[in-house]
Image (cartoon, rainbow, N blue to C red; front, side, top):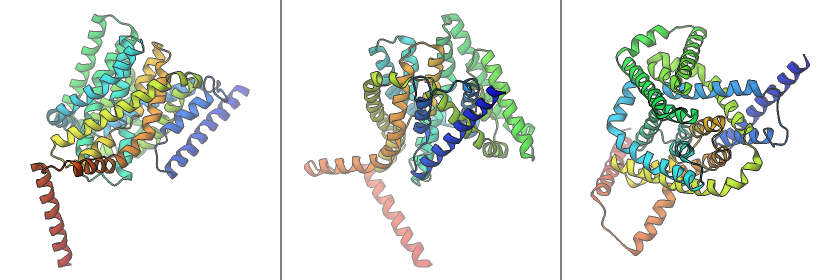
Length: 419
């Protein structure tokens, strides 16, 4: 009875603390993820007040948090959207992977961590935070901007790439041989391809089967199906997160929208628990030794993400302003980076990888909203200064952009005159 009371007290204090941290972050309009990680550091191994009683329950909640994060990402996209993005935007996805995964792999090899850790750290530095970026776009009023579809396409390609990447690192971390790892990857790709095929051809039928006007029954069916598929995927040595992501893709229309609205509070709760759990298993004293590599990696990959967004937006015919906005918006890292690092920490491949990933995410989840807001004016200011000393002719794209802006201004005046 006493242990039950201690558990309820500790877990209640955790949830209450997370709620207060979330309110604090919302008041100052920034992501609560760094605060959740800091809370875990404060109350974990080597922290101010270690928590032991509720650790097992928090671990289970953290696993559910990862599953819900991936499910909600899947609900954002239909299978046809994914196929269309894959066909039209795959060059941007390849550039994104090359520019941002290679620095992480190189850093791990320079630190002497070996090839497995290099593959893991490559994933940590590769993937931007969809959650943080979506919030930043909404806060800055850029959801309707011309560069926003380019940003979302890159995020979609990263999410889809995780369906291939996560089984690979799961096999590597499990220490399976080449044949077993190849078999696991073949199963993962086969399942992903099958789900995409079924979702494209029979998505309406699947959604109709799951659909229910009663919110309670819809919530139970979607959540139960997701946990069931995630468990089966994990039994097949495929990541449970991938299974949840594929369930989200298979649902579409009103069902996806209804499930999204019902599951959003649960996602927020268990995702917060997940970030705390990751912090609980990171000793604060282990961060200072890896802080310098984390800062270097954050600086390099912030620049490579800006270059990625700029290149992709330029390829799509976006103006210079939009290119810089796209690049600056993609800088933030968050939930996926921590998920990938969490798998490595659980497998115990490199003790310093968890602290490095924590410091890295903390830096970029704070820096990301700032680069989204200020990359464009800073870049244009520097370009203007350089342009004064070395004047140049405008490119055809810039001339076309100026004409388009003039037409929009004239159209706006005509509209105002008719009112």
